[in-house]
Image (cartoon, rainbow, N blue to C red; front, side):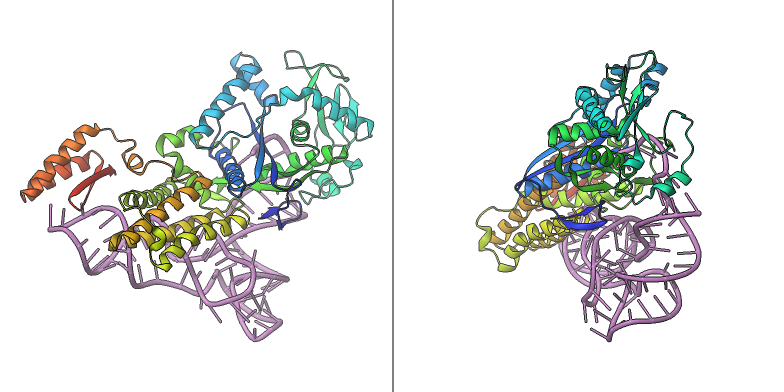
Length: 470
RNA sequence: GGCGACGUCGCCAAGUGGUAAGGCAGGGGCCUGCAAAGCCCUUAUCCCCGGUUCGAAUCCGGGCGUCGCCUCCA
């Protein structure tokens, strides 16, 4: 597989540290509020990356952390008059519920910063002993200018950073660029005993400490949203490599979700929570929307885009539903071209995914087969011809699982979210079938119109009638 | 101001040197009692200018436009 490595700015052949295994660390969320669609994109991207490695037979250890101690959590706790732990726990639960609803599988390990205070302190001490960190006024800072490789990931030069930096009012720092590894606690704030007095970890240090504690001092992939590239990941590299670790080999960053061409973000207030969106669209529609653009490009969020994604998912389920009725049998007895088309699907899918996880191209491979085998189904043909369509459907489901798509029961997919009672719908369909048999077209059409008004669309085929939501 | 990304059919979107995938929407046709679904046909030379090359959407230079990072942010 080839993956774009932010560290080198190139697509590189992915070679795991340990053959047959992959270690991935993705920066998770700070749990002070509900997650929005931007968070969903990162989560779905890493979920698919992980599923794809597994699909290729690799053993994946996927770590995704929760930042559960932080200024924003503390502020929120003060605002609500509850403990910071209550805030953190509330939004960890919300995160699990939302991501689960989105079909994002839990990571192999989901550590919390507060469960790794010991490792964090040890790492800060190590840096202090190496002269890369210094205590000042209860805080501990990283000496950015002491770390030679600083700026390599983000392509920034220290002197340019200095000139462009907004000057922070903090006289205790030796250099404005230095960042906090450990923060002394004020009264009422979460605090742990440390060699520097009561305090709590800075933001960047937890990811260095947790990733290395769980995955080792050298591992395969580390990443997150593009906005974490600087300063968060740059600082992580400084902390970890500064402490002598090899750290992550490959850095991957997903692009933003935009609204009206602008980044969706908390500060701009232009976000939709995952919960709000899942209220209006099925999870697989949201996933297909997110996967229809390459993960590194920005993607524009809109009702229209979601509606298009829904139509696209419907198209696949429509095929799957049709294929379910097809005869099963020895599909390899079908025409060579059709057999090759089934086999070729997996090949095309994998080739697309091998190329920097090109999910858009992988989806295109699926849609091409959907069209081809819809034609096979339309044209009828012999038993083997029908069986090969069924085999293609099975393949679509198997590969769809890598994307977390097309896993629902096709009939159920089209019936989901309907208000009317299903028995009642079936009864009306029965009445209409009788009317049609008697060539009472006006009566039949009246029933169809009535159901249509309730959002039910009827589809007649070969003596039977099926229905779906509009 | 510094650094970077992007600009492909009406909309979304793949494609990084060899002659433009796929989805949505639209038009025509087949199927249907009529529909729906499905199928077939149909719509681009890739922001502009210049250069390199036998050949460029793909490489280089310039321009225009959009966005991002440089501060908490997936």
